[in-house]
Each structure stands twice: as structure tokens, then as C-alpha cells.
Image (cartoon, rainbow, N blue to C red; front, side):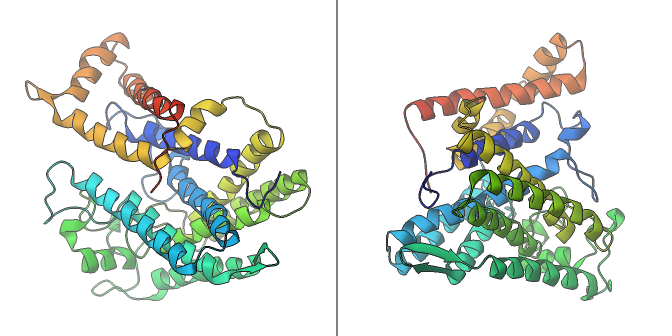
Length: 383
């Protein structure tokens, strides 16, 4: 296997697993009836659902190295690489705004932060950081892993210092408890920069994808880049898997020590949360790499390849589709609500959580069918 240029099947499959999971947890039949593992943690702590977004950012980091190495080895001008990075970042950010504003586009109150917007910023800054530290020598890519580790450590430390010691006007030190979610520096900066009208509609006083917490999220992305660096080393393939899994597991364990100083929290994207999610992501990548790229297994590869090779496309289109199902109404009841209440609840004998889960599974299967047609016709939409 030429690890300098070959595409990683495991990465597409890992991305597909992540996107399929995202569709599942984002589209229940009713938000009032969800099984606990499919919910986000209320504030501190974590569930399996809390791993999905950081897993995707981790995957973005892996992809940054694989894609940029290709251009560097092909001697593409730096200006063209930078333009590609900027263009992709802007498109991701704009798609996020389109998704938030659909269908009314009330610009006076449109939410500015968001999932695609955070992916955009993390991709942009992580790609620039990589270009700043990468070198090409004798036709080979040279990267100082130590430098990237130091950058990740610096980002997490900076965020910890800001959130712990910088006083919030009118409050003092940031309060991180669940009963004062708006009383921390991250929330204060979001209200100043975006104003309350442009923040998450469920709070309007803070945003889970806010500006300041994007700093440690960039750290999450860079951990994926580090893992890509390790996978591309010219050493024994099984050693790669063992070391990657071991380091990932130790990173996961270290998060519980960091939790003592600043709790694991997705909404705040705390350093402990970065270590926990990145450690588990590294373990997951190691398993996928061993199973699909080394052993060349095909078990369950097709469904996840279908999602993984068109990840942003299915995320964006399914998001629009979900909103349409809520907008189209019959006798003032949305199509989604009718299907859930009149069909799924009936066949499940009014087991609300089960009906809600079945709706989410059917939603995933629907988009698997749609994206299978894309995959069969080799339609891969790239930004």
C-alpha cells in the first residue's frame, strides 16, 4: 500500500458511520421521546451521541493531510492551494447559513454559528496550520508531529485559561454550572459578536457552536491530522494499528483526569471533552484501518461507503428535507407528525420511544436509498 497517495477506505467508512449516526440522532419522530443513548448530555458529562460531531471534525483533520499532501506532491502553487482552502471554507459556511435560514431567510434573526459553520472554521485554520508546518523534501512529505502536538496543547491551554481566569463583565469568573449556561466567557463573547438574535434559538443567550469554543474544536481537528501523519509513516501496518489504538485509549483515559479541572462538556467543548472524543476517534480509526485497509474485509462496507463518500451532501440535503416535512401541513398537522402519530404510534401500540426510533431509522434508510443511487452512478459532490 502506497500510504503517500492512496485513499483510505477506512476513512470513508468511518465518515459514513459518523454521518449515518448523525442522521439517526438528529431525526427522531418526536424530540420528547428519545432513548437516553440517543440524547446529548444535558450539560456536563457525555453520551454516545456527544461523540458524533467531534468524530466528524477528527475525520476532517485526517482528510486535510491526505488531500493537501496530494497537491504538495504534485507541486501545485501555494496560492492555488490557499484559494481552494478558502473557497471550501466559505462554501461550507454559506451552506450552514442556507440550512439555518430555510425557508424564510429572515436575515435579522438567522443563526450564524452552527455545525457546518464550525466545520468550515476548523477546516480553514487547521489546513493553514498544516501548510505552515509541512515541508517537502526529496519528493517526500515531512511534518513535525511534535510541533502539531504543541499547537494542540497550546490551544487547549489557552481556552482553559480564558474560560477559567478571564472575568466576565457583570459576572466575574466564568460560571460553568448547568443553572448558569449563559454566565461564562464563551457565551458572553457570542452575545457581543453575534447578538442574541443570531444565536441558537433554544437559548438566545449562548450557542453550542459558538466562537470561543471553536478554539478547542480546532484542536480536535488537528488530532485527526496527527493520526493521519502516523498512518502514513512507512512502518509495519500492524504496528501502526497497535500504537494508534494504544495512544487513543490513553488519551481517552487522560480526559477523566482533566475532567477534575474543567468538566467534560460538549456545549463548551472543554479540553477534557477534546481528549475523550479524540481518543475514542483514534481507536475507531485504528479498528477501521485494520479491518478495511489492512485485512481488506468488506463486511458492512457498502452502506457506510455510500454515506461516507457524499457526507456533506447527505447532511445538507437531509437537513433541508427534514425541515420540509415539518413545513408541509395537512389540517394544520405536519406530514412528519401525521406519519409519527397516525402510523408509527399505531403499529407500535403507542410505545412512544420505539415509534420515535423507528421514524429515525426509516429516515436513515430513505437517505441510504437516495445516496445509493448517487453512489451507483458515481456522483460524488465535492466542495
